[in-house]
Every structure is written in C-alpha cells, then in structure tokens.
Length: 298
Image (cartoon, rainbow, N blue to C red; front, top):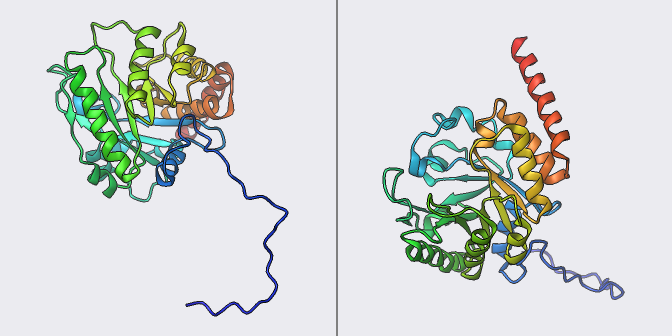
C-alpha cells in the first residue's frame, strides 16, 4: 500500500469545471466505455475516419487473386492500415499478436460461391472474439436476399452478444446479383442495420445520391472497395464517398491487387485522413511506386 498522504495543502482547481466531452463518432455517444474505446481504435480520433484493409474474401471464395499467400502479400500492408478486416483463421495463423492495428473479425459465413450466399449463419462465438481481443465483429446482411430474415437475425444475435461484452458489430450490406445497386437500396439496407443495432455499417458507394445514404444512417458508414478499379478511379471513389459523408473505406482488391499495394494504401490514407485530392494522391502513389522500383533495381 502507498504511504499515508500527510500533505495539508490540496489543490482542487475550483476554477476549472470538469470536462464532459461527447464521443467524436457519429451515433456512438451512449455506448459504454469499452465499446467506445474499441471504436476509437478503428476510427482515428483526430480525423474521425478509418482506412480498413479487407482481406477476408477467402471465407466464401477461397484463395482470391492477391491473397494466395497472405503472409507474403498482406504483411507489408498491415502497418499502414487502421483496422484489419479478416477471419479468425487468418488472425490466428498468420497475423502477429504484436501488431498495433485494430481487428474487425468476420463472424458470419457458411455457403461458398458455389451455393446461395445469403444462407449464412453466425460462424464465430462472441467469447472467441473476446479471446482474440478484437475491436469489432462483422456480419453480412442480405437485404432483399433469399435468406434476408436469417441474415438480419444473425446480426441482432451478435449485437446482443456484443453489447454484453462491449464489442461493436459492423453490419455489411450485401448486394445480390438480382438487386439494383442504387441509393434507394443502400438507404434501406444501411438504415435497417443501424436500426437493429449495428454500431457502424459497410456498404457500396453509388454515384447518385450517396449523400442521402450517409445522412439517413444514424451510425458511421464506411464504403467497400468493391472490384478492382484503376488506381485513380479508386481514389476518386474514396474522395467522393468521404465528401458525401462516409467516415472511411474498407478496401481490399483496390489495394492488394494494385501494381504497388504499399504505395496505394499510402495514397488512400492521404485521401481519407488528410483530405488530399484524388489527382494529388495519384501523383503521390506514382512517386512512391517509382521509388519502390528504383530500390528494387539497386
């Protein structure tokens, strides 16, 4: 035990009121301390945004191009991401426990690309998520899909479990082959996820009226990178999404399938966290890539 305090004079700073700050993240102020602390690991408290690196594709489609050897292709990218979006198998087998990144762990799954994808189940127990010290768990929600209700209930069950342990749930909106990818659908899907307890939502960027998607969703929205685009186009998409209210990106193929993945994730960070224009970020990307090529030639 510490020694008894025998000082007579004490300073209570009576002229300084105690601060009562609100949490920096949209729609998150009423969560518990641990819950908000985990969100603050995913979203940068200074910029209020996040660059998530998604490489969970194998949970339904096996060794995706660029993810054949995660230990080779993803490891160099890890230090530059705010959060890693991955499965528990990859986390345990390939990711060093010494990394500083937050982890958003895929918690739903079941069917492969050979079957009906909306027929997912909860694939991870929340206690296992606690054991791995994740910052959030992610669940796919198939609004309009054949197993819509099942996927929504997967999410609500994880929300209940997450609230018990202080772990946020990311609702990931899935767009099936027969569904129209427009703002009306995205508003519907993101709002349902938020209404039923998702702490933040991942969805696709759409060219028209995306600002209505973020405005009508009461929790943070991050955009999916989607299919591989030319680097400048991917940076433009990130810039447009941020300008229209998204609080980050969860990019995979547009980073790890890039000609220079490390250069690309640096450029994405410039757009998301430093408000750099896509044109300047692309020039930054090209400069880094050329420097990388010169180093390899030495």
